[in-house]
Image 1: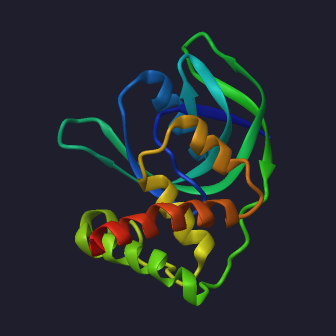
Image 2: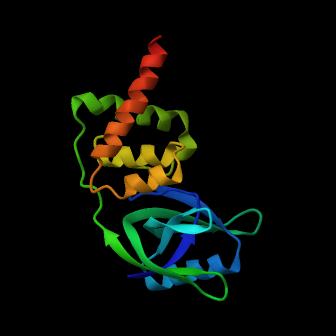
Length: 189
C-alpha cells in the first residue's frame, strides 16, 4: 500500500483519536489525497531527521475551519504499518510504501489488570476535553486500554516504536503494571 506520510512527534495507535492543525501547503495536499483515496494517510514519528519504521494509518473523521483560519482535522488510528520504502516529492510531501500490521486482538480485563483500566477511566474523568474524543471508551478491552496509555505517557521515540512492533498488548500491559503499580505504591506511602 502507498500512503502519503505525515511525520510528527504525535503517537496515535489504532483506535486513538487526535486533532491536527493543517497550515503547510504540502499537508493541505495530504488531506486532499487522503480524502479522495479513502485510504487516509500514514502518521509516523521522526527520530532526528529520519523517519521511524513503524506508523499508524489514520483516517480523517472530521474537519473544521479554526478561528485562526487554518484547517483543523480530527483523525482516528486504523491500523499499524511498517515503512518499506519512502521518498519526498518536490513540495516536501513524503510518501511511503507500507505493509500493514495486524492490530492487537481485543482482550478482556483480568482482575489483576482492573486498576490499570480504572486509572485510565479516572484520567478520562479528570480531563473531559480529552475524554470527549472517545464517546464509547472500551475500558473492558485491555488492548484498547494499553494503547490509550501508550499514547498518553511521555515515552521516548524508540520505546514507542518498540511497542508498535509487538504482535499483542502483553508487553505494554507488563510495562503499565510496573509504572502504575509503582505509582500506586508511592501514593500509599
